Length: 101
Image (cartoon, helix red, strand yellow):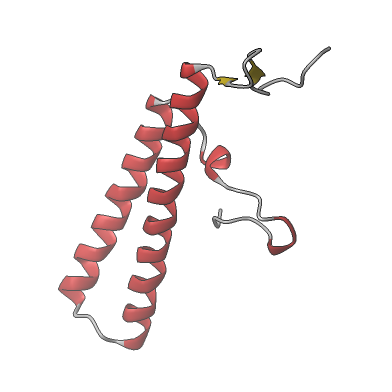
């Protein structure tokens, strides 16, 4: 019997035999997806506050610098783990995708 690529192999005892490298990579992908989602939410909130005039020019500059650094760090983390930003984006079916890009 053949199996699809990436499908776990079932041992005779009914237990799942998982590839530790794949599990580790998938866990890193999940963690980076959550971090990217939070980064995007913070960016939207910061833009909303700036549009409302709730921040000073100095605060706006700090927010901008911080968001740029966070974006660069996400690129570094993705590269470090051999992932792309597209791989972090979960398909939610009829709702579309989780992340903006």
